[in-house]
Image 1 (cartoon, rainbow, N blue to C red):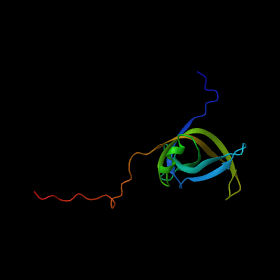
Image 2 (image 1 turned 90 degrees about the vertical axis):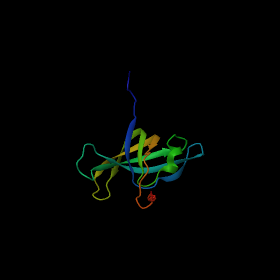
Image 3 (image 1 turned 180 degrees about the vertical axis):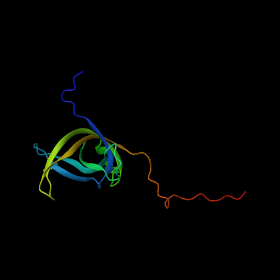
Image 4 (image 1 turned 45 degrees about the vertical axis):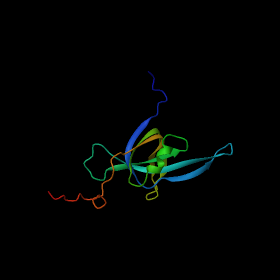
Length: 129
């Protein structure tokens, strides 16, 4: 089996901010929408509490991942799968060349465990015997 041309990456992380959707004009004159977001991915193994890196994620209209966007917001834990690429940029703070990561998501899996808010959860009433 040949892995020539295989570019598939799966990452899990928390969404940094609500996804932003924008329209892009295609060469044929049509429009297509793309959603962009950033996730924080924890380094493993790490003993530091804040040891993570960021990955920019793009979700194109029509993909399986696109249908799940309505459920994604800041703080959501997601698993994104797709093609990954290096994204070089110049740092605004020290003007040094850096390399970021860009994932073109084909599918996104959502965390199924509900967030528990102790104040929002109704407390069971005591039943007399």
